[in-house]
Length: 215
Image 1 (tube, rainbow, N blue to C red):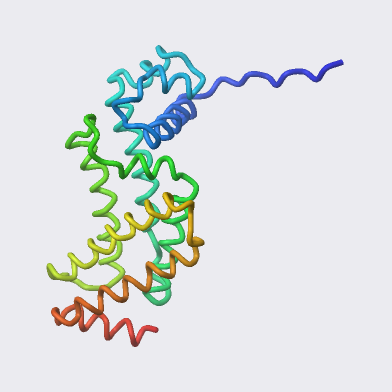
Image 2 (tube, rainbow, N blue to C red):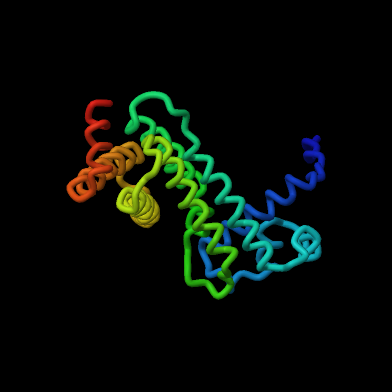
């Protein structure tokens, strides 16, 4: 007697919405958003087009923005690191989570950071920029500088841009080098860019001296 087929389980609202967002992120990561139709999303999720509209009545633009926001929200949480231990070790732990997200959600990460789409709007740009600003705020907070000057702020934001670029290149290079090596390399780069800025900025110079004493 053949085994009984597994019973069908109706997804609740949040589960179905998450399913649609995951399917959308996968499609948006591998094709330009303007080339992805709601029919494509429905097929990838194994549902009907009317069901997609039920959850996203604003159509593809609403779905695209919601998919980006879901990836951005999760990515922002990667930088929520307790202020325990030396700064560079804290940064390494945050990068472990960040790069782990990139590794496990490579489609969503690529979709989040891709640019130049005709469906890009001020809202989608703000979603991506929100991740960068949140990361910068977390790092500046851990640096313990009450009023960071423009050179220090610029240094931190430039490094975050470098981390994004390195992550995308890492995906393009077949996820090489290994994650732990990439993490350590990026931490070392953070120390290096701070040292360069310290030559021009007394505030950063004092910070670098403190980091050296922190170990």
